[in-house]
Image (cartoon, rainbow, N blue to C red):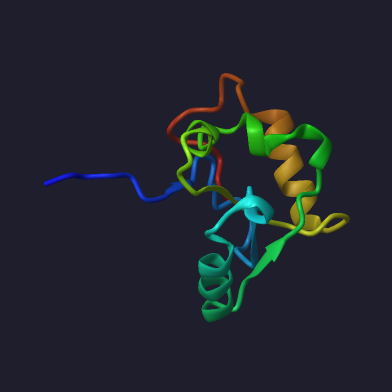
Length: 111
């Protein structure tokens, strides 16, 4: 029996810091998985939100990119927020205070 990887969904840092109302899907515009993701978010009354920091090039800097380079459809999914909202402030505060810092461990301060 031959086994093959048919898709990759990277959920690294899918942190419940803010209410889940939408997702960032890095690679969405380049992926065969976009229609499937659209169906899932619609069924759960969520939204696929635009990348608030496209200049960071997270699509090619995330772990799923090695799958994409091998021709395997992949997305990196993160809890999304809209710019200028309190949720953005919470997320950016966590990144500033905890991401890759001493407090970035298995028991982060999740509200």
